[in-house]
Image (cartoon, rainbow, N blue to C red):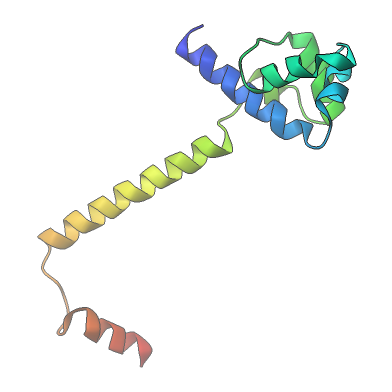
Length: 120
């Protein structure tokens, strides 16, 4: 698999796991058209370690009450979005720190004076 295919498999698995909610692996397997003893196959789908057929995705989407596109065109995971937000915040902090070192401070008393003005 290519890197994009690996990433899609991981994302698909994430959304399969999230959409399943409290449904058991055995019930999910039956919903996908497998035997109840195939819960381990569902687990492998959810971990991105085994490919899943489109017909099975459609069955699971129907059972879970979600659009099949959640699985066929999986969006970034919550963890990916959080990591991006943290990286962006860190970059902004670095920019702020660099700008603070370069620019002279405004005001007449530094940070303490600034705190006094806000509390008044």
